[in-house]
Length: 280
DNA sequence: AGTGTATCCTGCAGGC
DNA sequence: TGCCTGCAGGATACAC
Image 1 (cartoon, rainbow, N blue to C red):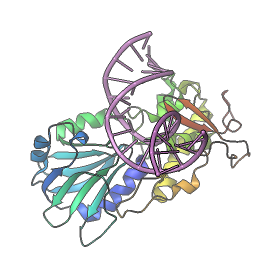
Image 2: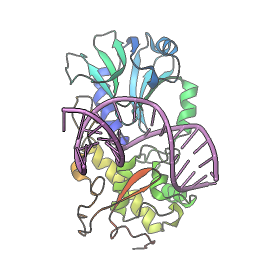
Image 3: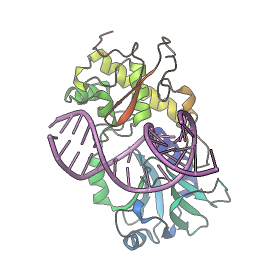
């Protein structure tokens, strides 16, 4: 569910409510979202102050004291809900996996229906190693059209698969990969290195634009995603291909096609996104 | 270096 | 009403 815009929206909503607070203790309802034994996890976070909240790729980062980082990968249905913090009353989490009780009152609940999410308490060096393995942030200043073109140029994999690979570029998921490819007029199955300069420049623009617009709309909610206030994202209204199989392309009226490769659905307009390279 | 497949888990929609 | 299948925003491991 959550890609970069959803994780970022969640962090922005959580920050004022959670930053500066202290974790009294953690209660583990479902240990399968952890990667270490529950007792070790609880010891790692107990009594720690949450200095700041950040995002990297699709991960929510809670920077704790003692140089520890609580890394929350939201998976498909993960959500962080501030419950009873500063007198707020968002919708109750339905499938709590971890509850962080806060010393100042209330708690932060990691809620996850499918439990594909993952919560880890890492040392500074463990996090640094993880961080290094992730590709560049697509909205950062350093992510230029040239950086994208160079990355694409080295790979034979389908460009949609390339975009989903967090080691190559961070934070892109299936929705925004498909939406950016449609806006750029690039077929998702095209081998990455066959994109022309014009195409990779268009893809660069489309990616940044789609991510920024989605951020402005508070992300995309298909069914589960909620921000820190429990509200859905509005970008679903702006989707041009994702989930629109058989419906007309907004640009040319050709029915949107669904393809399956890399074990995931790809959505495209066969007319606007030709299989052969184009230079226009 | 690729790709297809399976896995983790729950819920929902659609067909019968 | 129930039962079945397929599908879902993610990430990983495996064999080929």
